[in-house]
Every structure is written in structure tokens, then in C-alpha cells.
Image (cartoon, rainbow, N blue to C red; front, side, top):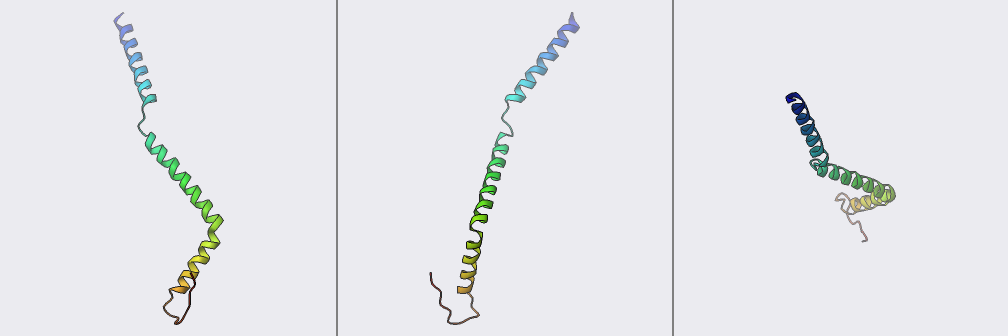
Length: 77
């Protein structure tokens, strides 16, 4: 009878431990941050695909306006 009690106690302890692990929220924050980071990366990739050439042209125009090698360049806003 004593060995049956020990086995039942171990089983109940194992079930309690498993139940505690399933309801535990440790690591949930990391997963949420990973999903958020992935969503931001996808959004930025989409923005660069849509506006990529316009952004490159804007950067080139800004670089041409602040180029100190050429004198007398006129830049329009």
C-alpha cells in the first residue's frame, strides 16, 4: 500500500508540475517582441520596395546640394 501511495504522489506531482509549466508565461514576452520585430521588418521592407527609388533620388539630390567641390550650385527645396 505504501508503494502505491508513493507512485500516486509522484504522478500527482508530475501532473502539477506539467500544469504549472503550461500556464507559465515566462518567455511569452520574448515571443511577442520577436513577432513585433518581424512585423516591423516586413513593414520596412515593403516601404523600401515601394518608395525605394524615390528615397535614393532624394538622397542623391541632397548629396548634390551639399557637395562642397562644386561652387555656385543652386538647390531648390
